[in-house]
Image (cartoon, rainbow, N blue to C red; front, top):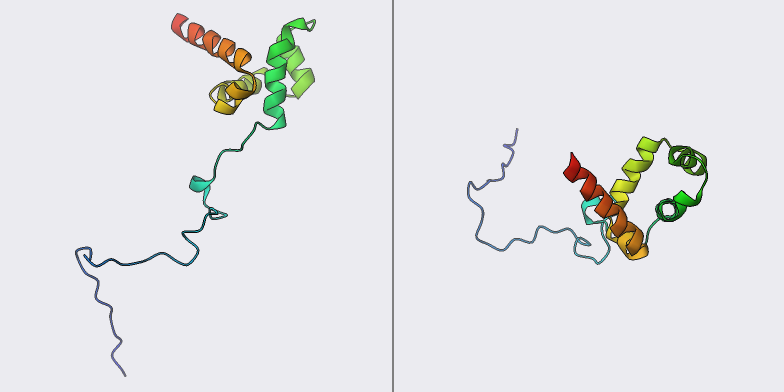
Length: 115
């Protein structure tokens, strides 16, 4: 039997400049499965736009806001407010509806102070 060759693994990093990138790693396009490199979309999705439009006009509707949320989006009020709060932290939402987002942010801060 031949003796298998064993690669020597240095205990300290080499001072030599080693290129360990695979071809294509430095391309302009992010890797398809690389979530950390993916960029935010350039604009809001339709549901986010609908939520902001609803917040702009919901007080004009008759009945409770929770019922209007169920009728309009088919969501529970709890899930709707989770989506809305996440949307308020999105800079794209601020660019899309600055007056509505700023008003809702102020309300959120004032409610947090009262607790």
